[in-house]
Length: 121
Length: 111
Image 1 (tube, chains in turn orange, green):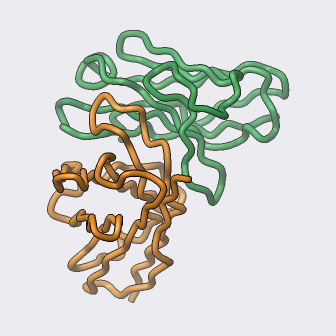
Image 2 (image 1 turned 180 degrees about the horizontal axis):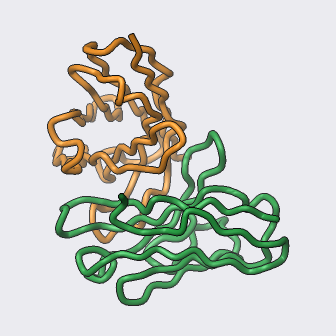
C-alpha cells in the first residue's frame, strides 16, 4: 500500500529554521517525483516545487525559489521541505504528494496528510 | 491571482448536474499540457479525481468526468450528492512559469 506520512505539527518563532518530512512506503521512492504544496489558512493550493529522488533533480515555483529548500534521502525513502528563517506568512498547511512525471504525468495520485506549520512570536 | 481561473463557487440540488470550469491560457492548457482535478474535503488532503484531462483513477465514480478544449477544461458532476460538497481544484503545467499551477479552487455547495 502506498503511503506518504508527514511529520507532526510545528509551532515556531519568526527567524527560526525548520525542516519537515514526508516518509514514503509501498512503492519505489526513486521512481516517482515528490512535490510540495502550500495551503495558507482558508486559501487554495499553491505548488511550491518538486524533487525526483532518483537523481535529486529539483524544480521550484518562481514564488518559492530561494525561500525554501526541497531535498530527499533515498536511504530512508523520505523527502523534506526546509526553511532557514521562517516568517509569520509561512503559517500554513504543507502537503507532500507523489507524481509519476513532472510534466505530462498522471497528476498527484497519493498525498500526505499535511503538516501544519504555525509561525508566531 | 491564480494562473488558472475557476469560479469561486457553484451549487446544485441533489441529483442535478454541475460543471466547474478552469480557464487558462496559451502557456498552460492551450499549450497542450494536461489538466488534473482534485477534490478536497474540509480538514483533509486533496484527492485526485480526474487525471490527464479525462481519466478517472480507480475508485472514482463515473459521475465525475473531465473535458478539455482550447485554453479551458471542465469538471462535470452528475447525480449530485450531499457528500460531493467540497472544494475542487484544477491543476496544469505552465510553460512560461516553468512550473505546476493550480486554479484558485471552487466551493461546491449541495442545496
